[in-house]
Length: 143
Image 1: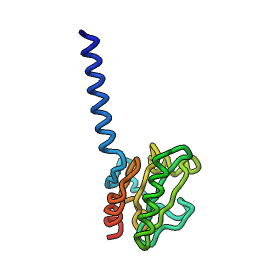
Image 2: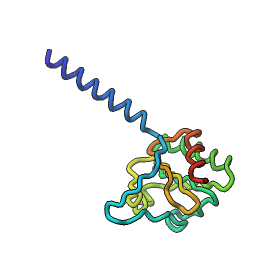
Image 3: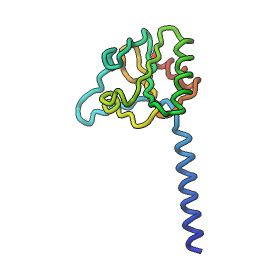
Image 4: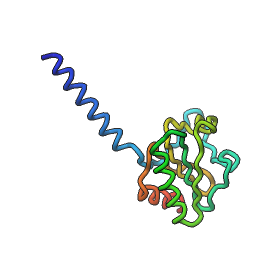
C-alpha cells in the first residue's frame, strides 16, 4: 500500500512540474531590474553582439548546435524581423559567447531577448516563443 501511495505522489509531483514547465516555456516576460549589488544592467552594444542593433529593436537569440527548438525559433524571429521595419534578428552561439551568456544569465537554449533601440533588455524568454508573443513584445520595445 505504501508503495502505491509513493508512486501516486511522485506521479502527481511530476505532472505538476510538467504543467508548470509547459506554461512557462517560451513566454516573453518583462525583464526584472535587480539592484542587489547596486549596479544597473548596461545596455548591449554592437561590440557585444558582433552585429549592429536594429533601428527600432533587436531580437537576440542564444542557440546551440544540437538544439531542435532553436531552429524553429530562428525561423519565427526571422519572419518577425522581416515583417517589421527597423527590427534586426541576431543569433549567437551560446558556446562561442560564454562571457555574454554569463553576463546575461542565459541558462538554456533557445533564450530570446528583445532589446530596444538603445540595446536594453525589455523582454526575455527561455524556450521557443510563439510568433504573436514576439510581435506583442516588439510593440512594447518600439514604443
